[in-house]
Image 1: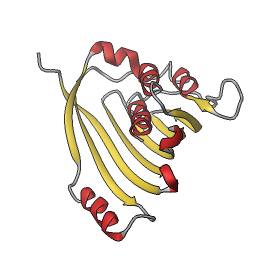
Image 2 (image 1 turned 45 degrees about the horizontal axis):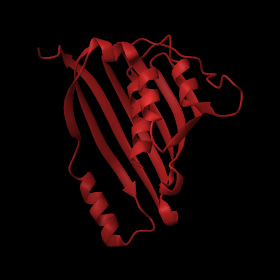
Image 3 (image 1 turned 180 degrees about the horizontal axis):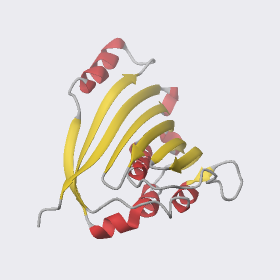
Length: 184
């Protein structure tokens, strides 16, 4: 599942790119939009500005219907910790690579992700991504958000199936904001 979440974070970065992309990203017409097709449809998008960013992730809800009540309570208590915030530096080189490079990195490993829906234009994204990690499970993620050169906001709901048919639904929000230049 870690790889599946990593693939989803590439979409979070996409929202920060703003600009416009074709809503018809399925270049080969096979009914699925690969990570490469999604990345290619973002070539004309505005790149994020280099600089220091503050990223905030907040888990909104989690449901683990097949788990014992005590496990469900433990999972929900993790959500009571509030938003998780960290700061990072986005270099000029990283900003220039944009979404296409992130998509390549996300596809390394055991997960196989494609988009059922991928619409990105005018600084908005509306996407549904399906990922399979073989015996480790699968996930379907719906993502909506907005972004510009210096900020983004995203809401993601992930419905996951783990080994043995265990299921989980998790909703989270993410925001990124440029807060200045990188420290020298």
